[in-house]
Image (cartoon, rainbow, N blue to C red; front, side):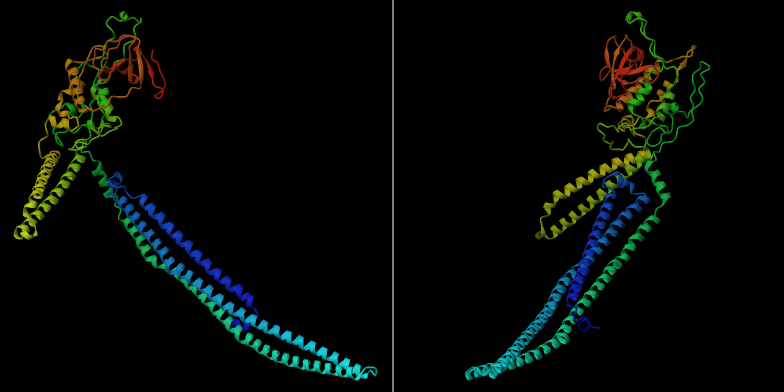
Length: 616
């Protein structure tokens, strides 16, 4: 089976077919190039995806990755990144092993094809030239034969005519002989050219063309083999990365199997355990008899007023809820009037109410109920010191619950010990170097290291003092040392109820015969003490923002704790609306604020609050 013998007359078709073969090869190269681009793009997208979900350094996300589920997710991200790397390997190998090699081969193939078809056209042109020569010789021989025949006929005619002279006859005879001679020469030339053409034609169809077509056939078969090898390489490149991709997938499965839900649950306990104990039951308070209310040892009021309670975590009360309440919220709970406000005067004149309205009394709810109210209130901050302005964390982490504070202090102590060890190692190294200088003065001056040695020693001393300070706080939290004094507790940013046992008296009002409650003088003083203590804790507290303005319709003499005096026609700022108890909280300036009866003022709220309302 040879193209030279089977397709000897299909030169043009073979030319078209071989060009189509090169087009197929170029199409395959383009396909592989696009595949490599897809692999690179896919790898880039996978890497970006993995990077997008990586935890940010020094952020809360980084702390979350101590859970086993998050660690498994991090492993999945890393394995995905490695998986992307294998797709990059696929792209690189396809480019180097297929695309580049095939591109060079196509250029060589085009040159070889061009050479073979050039030889074919050259042979074809040669045989066509021989054919033209043969045709020309044939036509000349034919022409000479016809002219010789006409000359012979003319001679015979002249010879038969008696009227023609002998000279004319001789001339005709010579012309006929000349024509016969030319015909014989043309015949010999034609015969010679015919033999030559037949030889060239046999060479063309049985030697030149088969040879050229055989080379073209071999070229085409090499192209087909090369294309098949490229396809095999295409598959092998993918197969080479399958084991590594399998390892990546096995890593993801292994990470998923390492998830420990019990361990994660324990980590949640360690992360959020406060160390506080839940409050005890609240005993029933009997209002049917005018007797002093009795509060159980485990009630919230008693837990704050009982100074003999066993201290835990450095003297903090076990029922303490202060860290979860804002100052403004707490003070408003402690000082807000709860008696229904007095009705407005019958006349707008101040003389219509000679003594002014009575100061509001705490009628319906004792102080312990107010504590219950802020127990159920939503905590917006975790401690008094965690305010927007400033926002600095105390050095001793006293803004945290006991258990979290212990963990932070322990972490700080460990860090300081590591720093101390580094400085000690550096000091030892400098000391050894100094000894070497002393033994070999040519290596350096020992005195040049004294300054550095002194500096390192000072750093070690500072770090040790710092470590002792944090160890003392840690020991206090763990109960190994006695609790700090009142000054230290105030610096901690938490309100220690042990220092104010008499606050419990605020919840022990006496019931009057008419069913209302009267406050003893000590109650008012103790509430003031409590307010003073909390004022000390909130020196940096920002005042509540004004939500509107109000105009006093009548004069009100605020004589009790939590109220403020106003004069008819005075304009003040509203900082808290009427909550349904008939009282509105207002402010005159930064230092004067309190409650007035809502019916005594005309309130204008800001438009962005709830719209203007008027209480008349």
